[in-house]
Image (cartoon, rainbow, N blue to C red; front, top):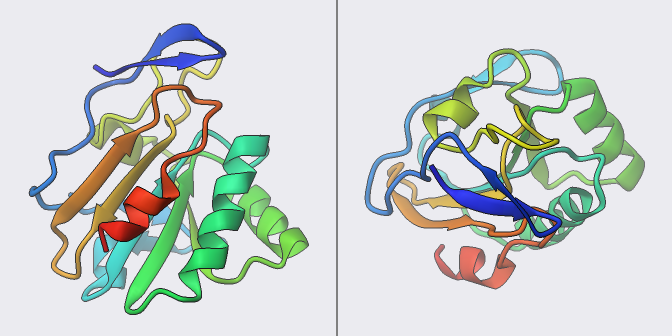
Length: 165
């Protein structure tokens, strides 16, 4: 269980992020068109998993914008923006912002992705949502970098995530 903060107040997650060097577990997440994507949809690609509570908050929106900007310059890399937001909200946000270089995926149905990766917030006002975290995966599915952002309102370390590629 990771101890993080929201506005300086302690909250906890359901576990710890997967270890660097381990394989990313398969997942089933909902795309904007309501189809399901799994890890095999991105086989052979390096992945940046930008995970956050909700696209309808300032910091989360900023992270999606910043990774969208970087994604266009990344070779053989896909940025996955993962939250428990409904796919409609993710699509609305990216459409309104003109963001086309990231892939939005929703864990709204079961929260299984968050639980499997130790991301589910288990107490406090955001209980049930995902914590803010980054997981970077190489083209073979091996985790090469993780970051559990200690204060939910803070942005992740973009430079460290991109340097891991």
